[in-house]
Length: 493
Ligand SMILES: Nc1ncnc2c1ncn2[C@@H]1O[C@H](COP(=O)(O)OP(=O)(O)OP(=O)(O)O)[C@@H](O)[C@H]1O
Ligand SMILES: [Mg+2]
Image 1: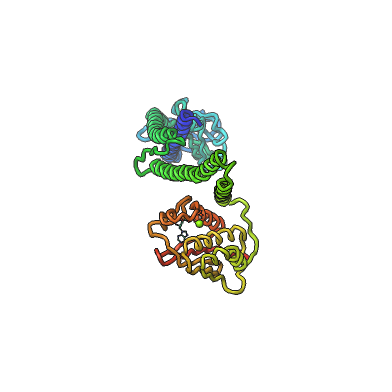
Image 2: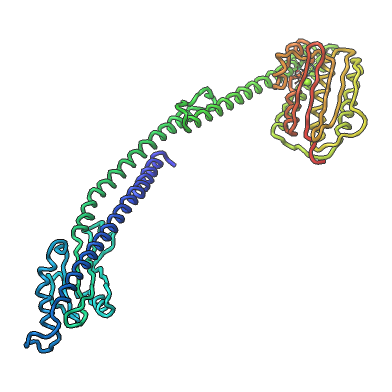
């Protein structure tokens, strides 16, 4: 993803995230306040209804129930009801009751009195009937609207009505409606909306700015790393990325720097390898060209010169062929190409190696001992492992003066097969021990002796052992002798 698109994507995430968090919190607060106000209005209504009903019941009880007025045709206590109605305005407008609206319905549920038109709620008829029938309080909450609508316009908690049964002087059951308009509570809800919106917008703004600032800082660090990484190409592995702070980006820069170091070491080794290989190849090529010139100039006439030139060309070309096959072996081993895993006897292979080297040993007057009788069976690539052993045996023969001793021992310890090649030769200087497994490395002593090697034997042996999952160690004392130890996993035989 492009960096600027990452930035806009993060901006979108920041807005969504802050909108969800801050908006969610504000909405929850708003819902809680609305619910609270609704409960407060409901409680106020109940209190009003209780006080009003008590007062009206008292008055109705005291009113005469017998017909006093001769004009009262029904003779069912109408004059008593009139007394009650006449007392209501004074009764229901005092003190706490002034917050509510009231309406009294007779036993036929016809309104006989109301404190105002607002007290008459035709829609609550059903509840009123229920109160008259069951003689129990009922409640209505009319005209309420969803909480969320209150977010976009004035809030509407609706009209709260409590219907209380009243025994009228005529003995019938009337209903007193206590009506409460929650204007105060709605005003409270409406008053929190503007500051809430301001808070939401500013909190979102602050969150977005904070997230963008911190992301901008991270992106800048990443960008610095990218620029530094861009400047690295195969020729410029000396670049170091800026390591700032102990945070994750700093850790990433440190890891990349370590990677660059490793790449540089590898590239250096590669360059050295190519230079060394070219140098080693150049020597026999120069020899061959020199002798070819000699042949051209004098070889035709002088059989002695011709013979010498031909054998020198033969020697140098063999050396080149050996170098090429060594280089090839190195590359193939390193890549783990054609490593087999078969069951074989290590002792038998060791004896074969010694047999192949026997003429050299004998001509140099060396005594050599091979592995003990019996078999040590293991899994692996017998040819490669034989190659590694013969490299060690070859070195032992090469670096052990006449009349020296060489021993090739094998043993098994648990799941490991151990092969040792020990000689009483010239030994390796302590300073060289670390480098003898490097390609083309030859200790000065060996170079001066002109033993004719390339310094590729031990590196090849090491790639074989590494490929087989084993290890190779050396123990040497200058002038006393050297012992190489191969440890190879035996595998499931
Ligand atoms: N058994 C040994 N005794 C003394 N020095 C040894 C012995 N084996 C190896 N070395 C030292 O380690 C160096 C590296 O050995 P390696 O087998 O890699 O190369 P080389 O024998 O010189 O050449 P090549 O094996 O390519 O013909 C040798 O030049 C020699 O100095
Ligand atoms: Mg060697």
